Length: 354
Ligand code: CUA
Image 1 (tube, rainbow, N blue to C red):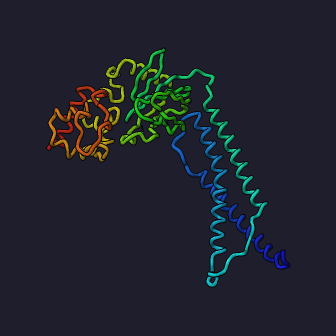
Image 2 (cartoon, rainbow, N blue to C red):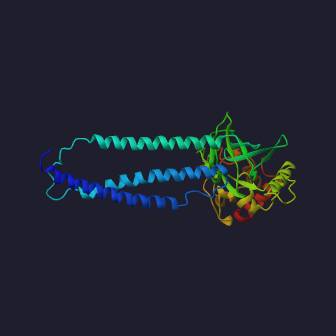
Image 3 (tube, rainbow, N blue to C red):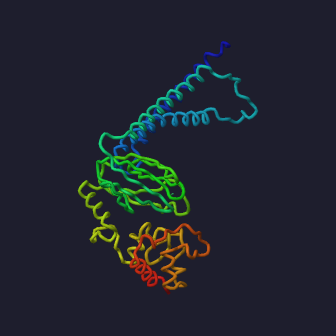
């Protein structure tokens, strides 16, 4: 160390203090901002509470590090930038700093071990079987829809949408008929892969009455984005009523069902056709539909006879429109009644037949 060092080191200590101060202020702002942002949809399960807290802790732990690193990079880029006349100069020959290296290895290591332990504890906690008896629900994924089988009095009640009683622990068994899908209800904060040939499981206790999207979170083919359903969390009495209705058969709903007996072509097209409303994949001006997954109906319907349209709805594989692939459109012959398909054909001919 030469005799000039003290001045230089006093100067660099001041620079470090300045950097840390800017970093601290930026971190505080960063954390405040990160906590104010509403990252997730509404929270509707017991598990969700723990997961949202975990998320907040992760934010508080990681935002300062991100901000600190970015602050130092920016500070150095400005403070130590090359000025005119510096082009040929080399910087001072500095050797590594052991103390700093130990600090910047130890702090992240401690943080990482701490956060991993916490995350592990939360995960074990939410996967633990609850004391109360669980409702068993089997979820079956296929290209491109979900079907739900709710166990009730030892029998399975089949439904196209998911109906759950509020405040009751649910034990999901998730399966797939074809490729890998992923059963996800964002409001519950829980998701798990549906893998052909094996059963996967998920525990959720809904805590809020309402309707929440069920989505597929694994790219599973061209119709992946349309593989959506709705989870209805009902109070116990309403749920019992709905289960009775579903157990009585698709047409036995007495008008109270979710479109089980709907015969208005336009309504079927835009919202109620199961498993997915036609609107999500096709373009049809009259319905305000702009989907491009399937053929544009304004263009193809005029060239088709009633019988051909009917066949395309009931058994889409029978004839595939040029430029489109088989295996995308569900076989509506399995989910819609003859009457409903006729209503769709009539509607399509009326609005796009010319
Ligand atoms: Cu099923 Cu994506």
